Amino acid sequence: MSLAAGLLAADLLAAARRAGKRVTCAESCTGGMVAAAITDPPGASDIFDCGFVTYSNQTKQDLLGVRAATLEAHGAVSEPVAREMAQGALRRAGADAAVSISGIAGPGGGNAEKPEGRVCFAIATGASTTCETVDFGALGRDRVRAAARDHALGLLLRALHSN
Image (cartoon, rainbow, N blue to C red; front, side, top):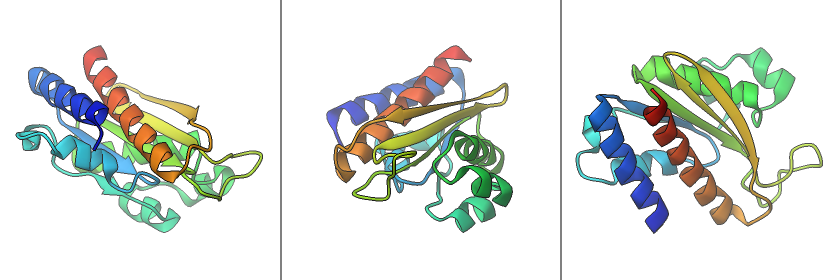
């Protein structure tokens, strides 16, 4: 794990402890990297019970309640799917904040409409859900996944500070 991810995870742990909040994650292209970062600092069990790695569309539906119609209409790499992933993780984990990630890490898999390096994120809290899309570019699989992990940790940290 990078130094940046380690620092973000330590800050997240401290902020969640201060706020008395619990967090969770729903990951696709990062394959558990966010959960690994969150659980790296000692004491992570104070803020984290579980995370979800939902790589396939079927698993997104089965574990997180993502609707088949949303997947069909928008594709897995979309803000509507990221929204349903985060909301499903929040409900299923009983957490206070959830981040979701769905993207095209590469190599390949992208197209003109959804290029390699595009990642959709959502943050769900009891009060709201917000989404954003980041185009990291064709940096290579490892770098896109690491950048997505770090961005997701930052989104969780900001969500805790704003609540």
